[in-house]
Image (cartoon, rainbow, N blue to C red):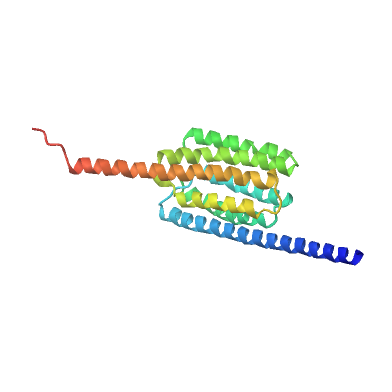
Length: 231
């Protein structure tokens, strides 16, 4: 009968609404967890910067400050919703780390790093000219990837100047960020995908280079403590 059909339809609609509210609630929880991971990664890193244990490359963090801001507003425009929260929290730390890097950061900067900085900053020009949020994000992510090259070079040569914790937390944060998005498109997902790859590479690089450096020191120490006796 028409009445039973109407009742069934109303029940179905309520189920869909309930499911949608549950999905939004879960995405909000995931976004908050991702934001907390940004805190967990950022606070110890800043502490180590002030203690002189790590030396952030100012060029990478300068560009990261600009790119994170572009990404955040681009995500909002394209409907990321609560999924943009982790990026906002991470941006705060990015700005602070950049400012502290000017005094406590890496100082032995070669000319090639300056070249990559110029290339990255020149990439901002087409971003300014375009009014498409999606194209803006693509340009911004490309700039961000280029800006990581000086930090990768620095870490390869001076592995003790970095900490793997912040990069590992960034990987986890960006994975959760993707799950917390309310809308999925290039503008909302590309930055997180790129950062998952870059930060995974940085985590592996820091851990492996630090292990190999410690092993080399132990070997050298052993050779000094156990000299070969010539007969």
